[in-house]
Picture 1 (cartoon, chains in turn blue, cyan):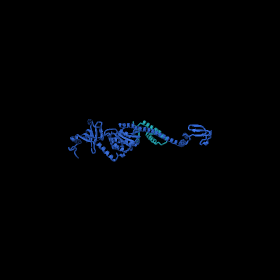
Picture 2 (cartoon, one colour; picture 1 turned 135 degrees about the vertical axis):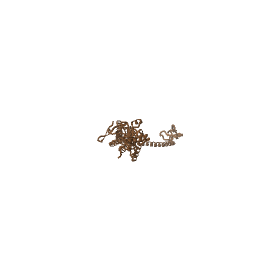
Picture 3 (cartoon, rainbow over the protein chains, first blue to last red; picture 1 turned 120 degrees about the vertical axis):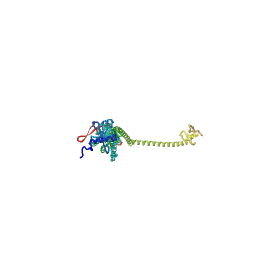
Picture 4 (cartoon, rainbow over the protein chains, first blue to last red; picture 1 turned 45 degrees about the vertical axis):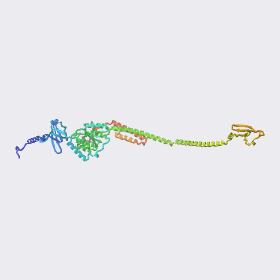
Length: 405
Length: 72
């Protein structure tokens, strides 16, 4: 057993003080930048803030006193934030704890969070959670739309406004959740599961409005990704702004750039429907008109057919044939007659050349006995005293046969 | 007709227009499709005019059952 007052034995206070002096005299530790991810961040009523900075293999307790915080206008600290902290490292003797006394904090965009994001993305991609074949088509006209978001958020009001304008026929079931903070990832996953359990929604929008990468971080958590992947109902993600991409976006069946865009993608626009209804009304009227026009034409055609075969038409046709035949007959007869007439003319001409009148005209005369009109062609035909009629071209001469000629 | 949802009415309207495109049906049927179609179009139009987005909130009861209650 050793003597308690032996000079080589140090009390806790002594060794702590020694250690503190050692640390405080180290130039590097007096002004150091340390980067890591915040965890276990707590701010007390005093205004002092305590957290642990950690990376994959080590952790370092940190304290950020109120006066330093106010002086440095540091960002709001949250678990998971990647930061670089500037300060001095010393020993907190009461707890025997080495810690960083923070003076300044700078967020690191491209730090540990990003690394986690990339690692999770890679892992889920390898599992096939982002595969195109997994993406389901969205229903064209969802009657019920599920929304997973914060009931207080402006994002919800934006989405409801869009849905009200574009497709008021639908109904919305809000599955409320917090969308940022440590409890958000599980709450979001749970809200999604509840909508699936309820089963009425035909499409689900998961989203929140814009914010810092930390504020959107819940949508990069594996629990959320898994809940989206196992949803039986197609999921549309609408997180942050156009430029924000989250793990949720990769797993979702449809990625929309914002909550508003997600609501737009979820439903058709009734303005289009109204146009289509009007187009159909017009089509009905036009088709009916065309129908009547066609039928009227068919009717006219039928009438024409009917007339063509009616007894009256047949009678008329017979009449016409009769007329035609009569006309033909007439023509033939006239032709025939005119032929005859010509022949008669020719004959009468011949007859004319033989006429005694012509002979008379040349100076001959016809002498008849006046008493009996017997033509005198011989002296035997007359007796002295007979009266004669001499026919010349322009008249008759009365003569008397002389005695003893 | 009054009880038809918008989607049902719209689908029937589309069917009526398609049917009427076949000009060989009897007049009575054509007129029927025409009148039905015009009524359906009006019904669709009225439904759009009257439609109001219904918003409900999902809640877990103490029994663990889910229920929806009006939101806002």
